[in-house]
Image (cartoon, rainbow over all chains, first blue to last red; front, side, top):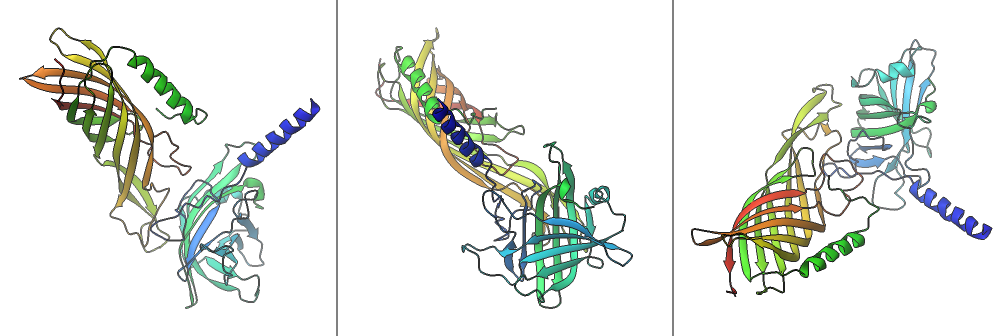
Length: 203
Length: 226
């Protein structure tokens, strides 16, 4: 009997694991090849063209899903702090593994007051911030000195709290961005759709 | 409204359909060889904001006599555009943040079905009622368009997209064959289920169509039994 129970438990565990598999949630935009549609469903997907090449946040496997962004406030000695939203990047091609891209990480930076809180962040719902104050940063892990920074337009189209899972409330953040770094790098048609547990915010 | 729960396998539904088919076949049927051409109008029962179509139907009852109610039917549904709205956004500070878009969705349906046309009764005037039960294979092709917006600078949030899927459907119809001005005519009320298929994980503003159609047609009999 215990033998049967053991295998039933194993079978149940396998079913549970399969049902809990994370999805890529990449729904291609037919108008913009290589990019995901602009959504607000918490798909944890971010895509953009950098100099015409499609970039995406990596898929880390069925257990971990898409690479999640990190959101945090960077304290500075200046009168304003910076809110940083960053995620990993890779070229979105049909090749597996994707070819090495010159940049593996992107950061959107916005100036915020030192007293900026999560409540203030929610008030950014529907707010568009233009080039004069924001920055986009491209980082290369293989070449840390190859850090490129330029002005960015950032538009938080939707910011909302998802309380459907009471044990793990989350922010759903959808937006658009573009930017220009010097004369050599142009970022266009950037869009993101993230679902981030509220506990991941450090402000 | 007609979404089939995922836990009911298609095989079970098919078995159920054939049980009904066989049990009705045991009744006396008076099918005659005929070809019917019919058209009319239809309303979708599976979407809150329904789709409307003009159905064009061709029905063929190949076997004369009373023992074989078999029939084949081809239905093509010409859609009226369903209009809706969408929102598009731009990060470009030189442009308005948000624009309202007009969205149109046109679902084209083609179904080829086979099944039985079962005689129910005859009126004093000699007009006949039938119940049609058919199993079909249907293509539903949804064409979505967002009109008049700057695709280079604006992104549509949660856009609807085209969908082109094929799967099985059931259809049920009440048929009234009657004579008027020395012509053999048909009035038919037909209900077709949506595709027995999930529409997918990506949320759309529409579901597969379940057309309820009322058609008026002309019966052309051949091998007519007196």
